[in-house]
Length: 390
Ligand code: CAA
Image (cartoon, rainbow, N blue to C red; front, side, top):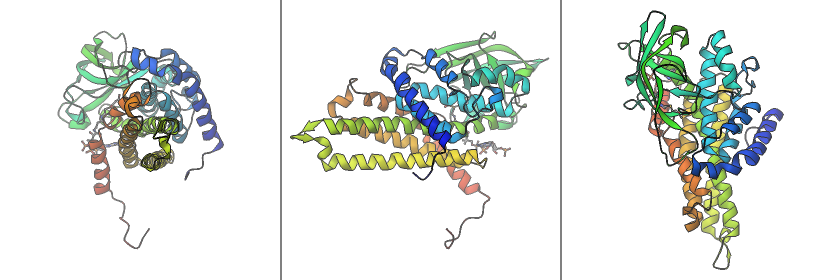
């Protein structure tokens, strides 16, 4: 591997791998069927420091680097993608937004319990008519004395039902495009804030995805996170980190599908020998391994750029685009390798295949990643390399 992990990164990966395989994996299939939200597991993950890994210790986190975080997230995704999406949203767009934009009081009141996993957060950006284009959102927040009144509907919100608070984007100025969007902290129980429709999804079934409804919901002005107009940049910043997380999730699920395929190929006999003896299968195994390794390097590279505090937006999108498309190919190949058994619920590849499908869609579709990547290249002010430079 290109990256040599530090002793601490290796220790975190080993610890999370053991926890994930012993605790998270055992009930993953059951949860996929029952759609039961694993509240107890999140409490355990909170105690292990997995819910706010990159947050400073003084605010309840572990002060871990992004490389440790992606290793840990991949290990959780290996066992249960539903669990890993909640971990991903909590660590990146929730905790990191509080850490970067929050006031001291907001950090003490909300970030500490969030980072400790005592409270789950949701991020409300998407709307029924505003998905890839969040600037066109219709939710408004109108100032009324020392309060704001929020009206609108958010859609496809991860942890919408189970969260204890939502970070909600809303237009505070309808005339200034992305500069008129702000973010509000809205705790559950606030009058005028209800959970709406709960989606019935093909995958990630143990993580709830819901509408959030705001009907003249009054929140104190001090519940604004960051300054008025910071909302779009906060979302973009959070999504940069989130996209590395979705790439790490993709890696974990791909590795699980790959391991299952290799195991099956070694044990399944046809024409008098294990199917792993056939070149058609061996070449597929090689192709799968190459793609998984390529995704891993892209993810570690983007994570290391984030840790070095250089602009990693393009690299996060490259990792997300490649890894999420890769896992859809790998889970499809793993299922095919299982033949008819792959199409049944007797083998986990069927779940991996369904879970992976959304990875090219949420936190920015593959098409949006291509926009971010090409925008960065074509607007990049860095001097391009000449043919003689390497
Ligand atoms: N970090 C900080 N600021 C950023 C930024 C970033 N990564 N990207 C853009 N900005 C800033 C720009 O600097 C610019 O600011 P100025 O006007 O001050 O210069 C401003 O934002 C507008 O930037 P662009 O002109 O590049 O924006 P755009 O409108 O052309 O393109 C987009 C934006 C890339 C298409 C963006 O709208 C986007 O990413 N859309 C997809 C949204 C998305 O991913 N939604 C997923 C929902 S969350 C989810 O799935 C949740 C879940 O629960 C799992």
